[in-house]
Every structure is written in structure tokens, then in C-alpha cells.
Amino acid sequence: MAAESARRSVGTYDEYRDAQRAVDLLSDQGFPVERVAIVGRGLRFEEQVLGRETVGSAAARGAGSGAAIGGLFGLFLWAISANEVAAGWIILYGLLFGAIFGALLGAIFQAASGGQRDFRSASRMTADHYDVMVDVDVADEAERLLDGGAPAAAS
Image (cartoon, rainbow, N blue to C red; front, side, top):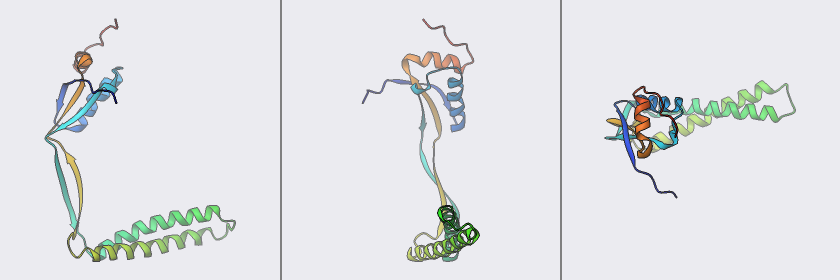
């Protein structure tokens, strides 16, 4: 494994998408972006609670997921079968059995949790700011490009 080279920040951004735009700008101007990293500083984990989870809501979500998987499975079975007339029935049975199986599993797993997690949530990692870090030997060129300057002539 090669030793990691020293890097310097060429820009600090409050939003990740702004750091991405800076790297895109460098890429568009032919900068060797494999020498760039976006580093989040002040990291924190956030979990947004979306709602209460009950056996019924877990069963409903399980039914939806199961129906989708069952429908795809039915479509696959139809595709490999020789009986073209039964296509709709094969797919319908896949949807139906998938929904039933998914609902049962969703309800069972929620009931088995014993009320320890009766809510749904979405989690993400965020940072206070994002630094665009560039290898030291090309950092001056990256700063020039990000400031809107023309690329330096190759020697």
C-alpha cells in the first residue's frame, strides 16, 4: 500500500453539495481529481423519527415489500415457463403470496421486538463543514482553478 501524501485544504464549505461542486469544477478543468478528497469535520449522527411503528404498520410495509418481491419472482417464473396463457396468473399469485408472506414476517418481527423500538426512523451522518483537500504538490493549481483562474502552462 502506497504511503498517503500530505494534503492541504483548498476550500471549506458548509454544505456537502458545495464541496462536490468544487471537485466537479476541478474535474471539468482537467485537474487530476484522484488527488482530491472531501473531508467532513465536526461529524455527528442524526436520526429523524418518522413515526410510530405498530404491528399493523409493520405488516402493511411488509406486505408492500413482499408483493414487490413476489411480483418479480412471478415475472421470472413466467419468463422461464412454457405456458404463455398463465402469465397473468403466475404474476398475480406471486404478488399475492409475497404480500401475505411479507405481512406475516413484518408483524412477527415487530411483535417479537417487545416494544423496544416502536418507531420508524431515517439516519444520516452530517458534518459542520467540508474541506476539499488536495495533495500539497498540486494544491496551488487547484486553488487557482477554484478561484476562476486559467490552468497553469505545463512545463
